Image 1: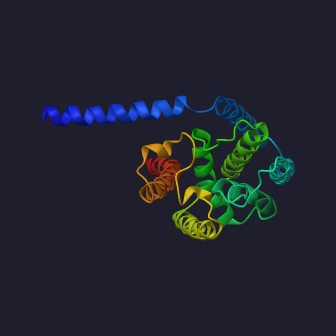
Image 2: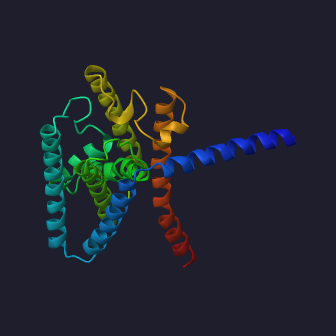
Length: 253
């Protein structure tokens, strides 16, 4: 019995040390740009929450144009440095797809399926991108800026959607799961024809990432999908907590 406990304790310590090693290996720019993006996002959300409806519309329109300009300059920079290619340069990661949906949302703000996508998929993907990075090209400053700028704007949109009163229901949850599954299938098909690895459906992301703690393909990808589903579920359950508190409070009255 004691040997079994010692064995499990040793495994837990080993995993903990591996996690700490990965955190320590994060590029310095990841920490710097991530911190700056987080502070700007918090400031932006605070400003938005104190604006009139007209100013809120202006902010969303401005953010949508920032997304477009950010992506255009990014693609131009890749062409300028001669490193653009179909295997790595297309905006086919989940977070970049979410970012490019922001201009659509700016003109379709009542579309519930878009709000649900930002709440679950957009926030989930960008949140994990802030914690971990696959960027091996962080030596190029603009790539770092593009990375955190796009992810930060997606999180910003998710937060202001919540501020404006959006609360998902279980239909929204399952619909987003279905859309995510469809997206994975489409991107996997594109990867097959382009011999690419968008959304990391064919191989682990390069560099030092938390994917190193997972087994090889295809098991790691199945684990990533499971973690994503768990994150969706956590977001849904957290959303339900205020409703439970309000119902209990009203029942006491």
